[in-house]
Image (cartoon, rainbow, N blue to C red; front, top):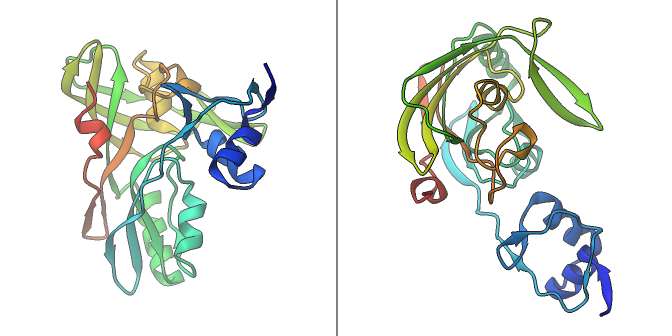
Length: 244
């Protein structure tokens, strides 16, 4: 059996460059049957046929002279969204596999006002997540978070040395030993929801970095943000509504 690197086989199959093929695999978009291809440089049968998930398009939510708000699809980096909306700049970020409300600002004056609201914890931030196990009662986690970088990758932990962080979790639907929850976060530290849910032993489905089982994506969606008297909502993705 002839073998070849996964990304090289994919590049030929899709008619794209090697680097584009590698990026598809690194994003978590490439499958053989129902199994996600995890290592771009892994050796596979040269006749392997891949299935490639498509990234959904960015959906506009709101725009005025100060701000652009979009519904970011999963598998797209926040920086890639910013490049599409230049000269607007990101006001905050979402992790690559997190979908939902993402805000970009058009001028420095509004950016400074908005950042002040974030710093004073005056921005309402509501997420939806599917988590491992059964949560039957609301849970509040008020634990400081410390974020460190390893190999250019952020990793957060509950730590007395960290910055204040408070998260509220409200159960919505229980299905087959997993729970769909509403998350309201205060402060907004790096990976706050993921870290606090891992801390209470209910990691997000698909969030392997923080103890969740493998899934098509990290099942976390930024549903609603309220900022300076404005409210922005990104409808729940189909993957969340139909996830059983």
